[in-house]
Amino acid sequence: MKKKILNLMLVLGILSLSVMPIKASGTYWEQENNDSKSSANVFSIDKSPMHILGYVSEQDEEDNFILKADYSGKMQIDFMCYASSDGDFDFYIRDSKGKLLERYANISGNKWEYIEIDIEKGDYLHVYIDHDAGYLTKPYDIEVDID
Image 1 (cartoon, rainbow, N blue to C red):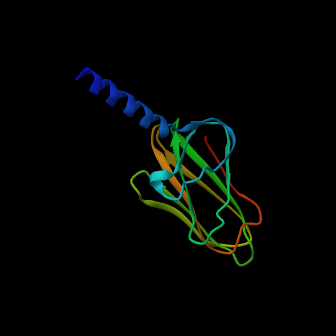
Image 2: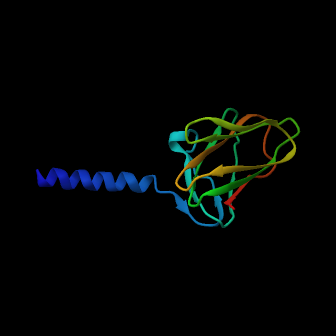
Image 3: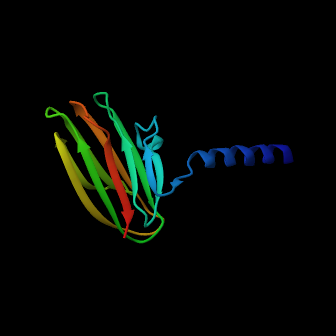
């Protein structure tokens, strides 16, 4: 019985490591596979700016991120998209309950979007990018911090 409990504790410990958020400032590239909320890249956000860079190259591809707040305040999100003129990219922000807070649709060309969202420490936002048409001329950039 003790051996089963120890094995279970070991398995649970390994599983919890796989969902630990990246906690840092700086620049990070998205990590595949992040095509759904359940496989999203998880970041712990503080008062230092963080940049998340990535590409969505295949039609109907999604990149998903969970942005967890280390502080209460206003989470500031800048989304820079560098799309072809025939591009069709959508940028979504949902709260932890799944409520859609913001959607920027049919983004083409070079586009910059900015949003501030009140957030409590420990809560998170689900941010994702959907690619419908066209291509990116350089990586998208999501800059995020809490003020």
